[in-house]
Amino acid sequence: MKISGIDHVGTAVKSIREARRLYEDILKLRVSPAIDFPPQNIRMAYVDFPGTRIELLEPAGGGSTIARFLEKRGEGIHHFCLIVDDIEAALVEFKNLGIPLIDSSPRLNPHGDKIAFVHPDGANGVLLELKEKNKDISNASFKTTAGVLKTKGKLTKALIEERERQRDYPGERRRRVTPR
Image 1 (cartoon, rainbow, N blue to C red):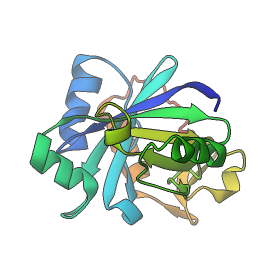
Image 2: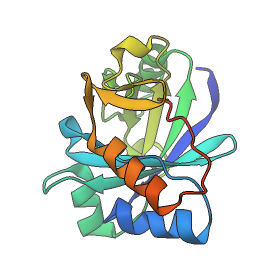
Image 3: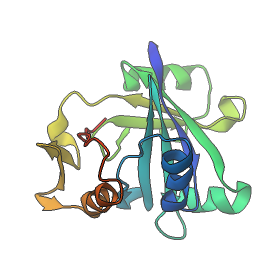
Image 4: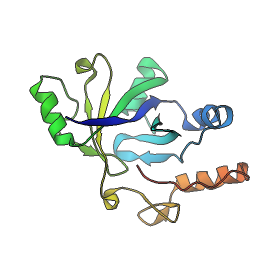
């Protein structure tokens, strides 16, 4: 299995809006617009750093894994995401080594990347996400066109929030939102 780096550190938060204060107002970092991911019943946003990102995960309702995590452990690091070149081969390798998996086959994240999770029991108590980056953006559930975030041709709530943020910070240089 070839691991090419850490894609992100997933962090469970009660509110992305509240977390945004720390990252944008205090640390002066850029937080992406939040997107809803109904299959997992979560909202997510990213804080960009050179070489990696922090993924902010907020429950979009009860019953999500993030809601359960927050109830049990409170806000904090949820998982590490490792970039692999072949996720199917990585899953076979973990299985052959007897390492417990949450996902026996990959699923797609909102960006169209293949992902799967390794159970914390097999990774020294750490939830690991494996990610094979999407090479074909047409599979993504959202994509950009001239910097406009769209989902199935409709402006998303994330774009509206981004526009509101730009009004709040008018001198801020506009940054193109790109899927990962």
